[in-house]
Length: 319
Ligand code: SF4
Image 1 (cartoon, protein in one colour):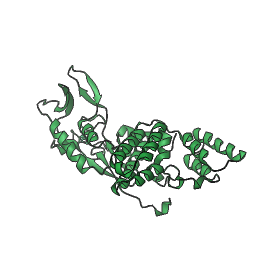
Image 2 (cartoon, rainbow, N blue to C red):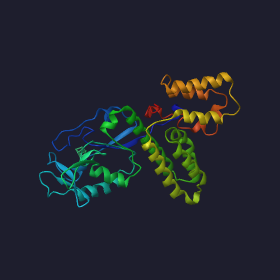
Image 3 (cartoon, rainbow, N blue to C red):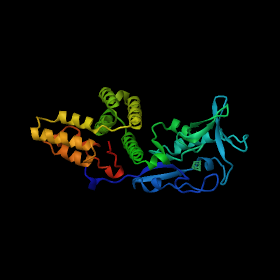
Image 4 (cartoon, protein in one colour):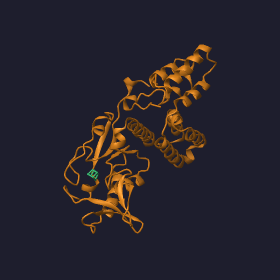
């Protein structure tokens, strides 16, 4: 892949409007977030959404909270408990799941009863409080289960931010293939292009998806593609560590011929240096691709991992 021929796409992501700088909070303030506005790739287009103003609550407005009632979670006014916004918020999530079906990620405001990913306070029947997803957040994710999400606290952490960006980019790439019309050959090509990345994160899922792709034909493509991308995105979301050595061990084993003792020692030293943080992934890739036959290995030229021409989207190669 050649950067010079790469046309930068526009990748839309949703964002809690207060984080995007809109003064829509209950007290008329915003929570402008530098990482959302300045640290994401230039090709990301933010789509601000404020669920509470979207269901007709004004600015300023009385604060609301989550509470559990007879096993159900409801969104009610704190000072006006009779004001129940649950139905309106679920209807909004239905609507937004359709109108935002092209967004490839969402940055949510933490601790909000509407937007929080996992740390809104939920009042229990017994008066205690536990942490829970905001109602809009939960409902939207149920309707768009592949959607990568993060809150501003995750965005402030470099590793979490990079992983989020990567998942957004990969979902975008999946949708491009899907929109072109999925078939067995396209599924195989997508898997081939991204399996090294998956292997670095989660070997078990990678091997499972190797099998799924190998067994998929055009007859069952719709169901199998759905299973594939669900497992692919879940593996990326659940990954906590990236094992680059695992990928390079596989690649080295696939090389034609044998390396000279000097080449063998050199590449093993490079892997140790990568693990120790003494060289970065660009250097490691360059050293691997310089080995005899490496650049000609099947699938290598289209590997998102080895030719990260989207690297301006994301520095995602930390161990
Ligand atoms: S947290 Fe969500 S609902 Fe609250 S002001 Fe921000 S965007 Fe609106």
